[in-house]
Amino acid sequence: MSPSRTPLRRREPTRRDRGHLTILDAMDDENLFAPHFDNAESWVAWRAFLAVLFGFPLDEQQREVFRQCTGRQHSNSEGYQEAWMVIGRRGGKSFVLALIAVFLACFKDWQQYLGPGERGTIMIVAADRKQARVIMRYCKGLLASVPMLAQLIQRDRDGVSDISLDLSNRVTLEVHTASYRTTRGYTIVAALLDELAFWPTDDSSEPDREVINAIRPGMINVPGSMLLCASSPYARRGALFDAHQRHYGQDSDVLIWKADTRTMNPSVPQAIIDRAYEDDPASASAEYGAQFRADVESFISRDAIAACVSVNVRERPPLPNMAYRAFIDPSGGRSDSMTVAIAHRDGKVSVIDAIREIRPPFSPESAVGEFAQLLKNYRVNRIQGDRYGGEWPVEQFRKHGIAYEAAPRPKSDLYRDLLPLVNSKLVDLVDHPKLVNQLASLERRTARGGRDSIDHAPGAHDDIANAVSGAVGAISGIGAFDFEFWHDDRAWSGGAPSSDELLWFLRARG
Image (tube, rainbow, N blue to C red; front, side, top):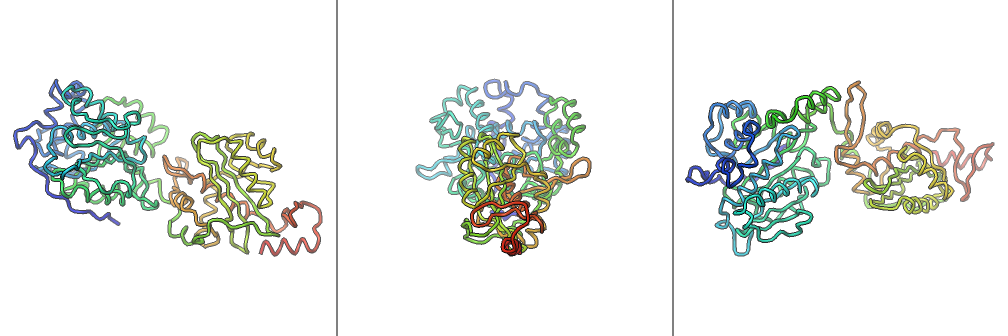
C-alpha cells in the first residue's frame, strides 16, 4: 500500500533564476567548496543530479546521465522538492546530502517563514544516531573548512556526539532517529533520510512510512523545503521500493535517481566490485549495482504473530506438576542481549511462560546467575542454548547446577519449524512487543546453493525471537517415551516410571 503524502507547496524559483549563488557555483568557488571537488571526473554524475534537483539547464553529458539514472526523457525545469536516491555503496550519497544541507542552511534565507523564536530545522534521520552522525560530521567539516561559514556557528550543542548544530541565521542542523514520535512538531526546511532501505518497514511498530508521514507536515509552510531520501537498496518492500515502483521512469514531481556505485563514484576500484560479485552476486548487485534484492522476503506476517499473543499476559507463574523447558541465547555482554525463554505444553499448544532479556553492557557471570534463579523457579535443571561462546556458558551454568547443551539445530531451522505452529495458532505467546517486532522482522534469504536461511535483517536483532523459537522447539520435541520431567519439585529421569508418574506425564503432554 502506498504511503499517504501530504501535498507540499510549489518550490520557489532557483537561485540561478534570481541571479544568486547556486550550489554548482559553490562547488566551483575556491573560497567555498572547490577544494573538496578537485577531481572533476569523479563528480560528473553528481553535478548532473544537483543540476536536475535544483532545476538548472543540462548540457548534453548531463542529459545523458539524467536519462540513464532516471529512466526519463525530460526533467522538471523548476527542479524537485522531493528526491529519492537509490545509489550503490560508496557512491558518495552521504557527502552530497551534507553538501546540500550546508548550502540550504547557509545560502538561503528561511527567516521569512519562521515565527518569533522559531528555528528552521534541517533534519538528518537514520535508523540510529550513530549512522545519522556520518552526515552531520560531513556538515561540520564543510562549515569549518570555510571561514565565512564557520562564523555562522552559534552553538555546537553536544558537540562531542555530533547531535545538533545551531547557526546564527536561525537554522539548526539536527540528528534524529527514525521515529514517527520524535520527528513531529518541527518546522523543517530540509529532511535528509539516510539508508532508508534498512529502516524498519511495515513489520515494525515504527515503520518507515509512518516516519516519513510524520515529517511531511513540518514542511508544508516552508516553500522550497526539500525531502531527500538516499540509500543503497535492499529488499523489495518498504518506502524506498514503493517510491521507486511509483515514480521511476515516470513524468512525476518526485525524482527517483538510481545508479550503481561506479556511475556516481568512478574512483571506486572495479576489482573490489568484481570480487564482491564473485563472492555473493545477489548481495553485490544490491550493494554496488543498486538493484533491489529478489532473494529476500518477509518470513512471518505480523498478523499471524499477533493472533498467537495472549493480550496483557506478560508472564505466567510456574505451576506444580508441569514440565518446563528453556532455551538460552547467550552473549558476551558487549553488543548483543542475552535472553532466555521458558515454555510448557498444553495439549498440542506450545506455551511461552517467561522471557528475560539483559541488554548490553553487562557481566556475563551476573546474567547467568539471574537466569539460573529464574530457571530454578520453573524447576528447570537442563537447558538448550545457542552454540555461541563455546564452553563458557556450559561452565557458568554448571556452577548453578544447570546442564547447558548446545542446540542440535541452527536457529534458521528453529525459525522454519516455528512458522507452521504460528500459522496454525499452536503457539501461545506472552504479550511482549519486542518479541513480536523481532519475529515479524525475520527474513528468508535464498543462498547461492539454493538453500533458504532465516535470520534478522542487517542491523537488526533477533535475540528474543531466537530464545522463544528454541524454547518452542525444545518443548515441542518431547517424545512420547521421553520420561524426563519434574515431579513434586524434584527431578526424575530414566528407569521405569510408576503408574502415577506415567499418568501425570501423559496428562502434561496432552
